[in-house]
Length: 259
Image (cartoon, rainbow, N blue to C red):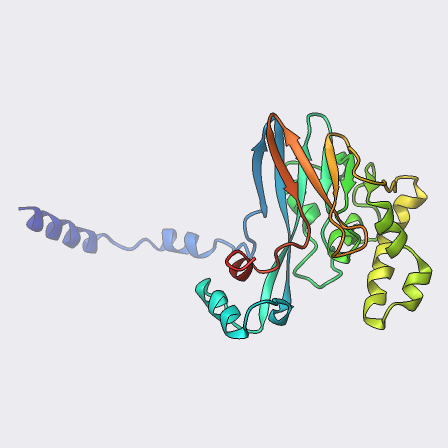
């Protein structure tokens, strides 16, 4: 009985006349060409933290040391990845601390190409305006962390924010003497760092800090090594803690399995 009923329904469906109006309307829907916004929200105690996706850059798999090339390729393949490049995400973190917006890192702008530089867009998609950000805490002054403090026109993307970074980091990357003696391949890093913070310096909004200080309820934690003044940020609320690192993981497929 059930089989006969299903067969009858199938026959009836095949006899329904095709409607050109419906088919045409569906075909005329314009393709969107965009993905959903790149942000993820989470609660930490009484705080709201929004991870913002700036984009990605392809890095050479040779950077992944401590494992054989065969093992690296096996781990990449386990996540349906392959080849000599690893796709590395660049992110920033917006902390809504009840009346104060604190952004940790600012992304790369277009310093490394068109696949990066979307922090401003993601921030707006998440419901915030860049001019409402009060403080930008920089992990360090490499281009993929600092270049995003400027918009496409080279103006401050966060015009009302203070820029905070470790003094030792500022002393190293903003030094013209250090830039002059750096290898040619590293000179652009110095130039981008100086160019990025210059408008904030001119406005009196570039304020380096010294030591493991409290920055509006967020503790600066020295994690020197990747750069001279590399700093992580410890966020605490209602007994919960989050340590925001920088440049700790460049390939989730490989480094989650082999830290």
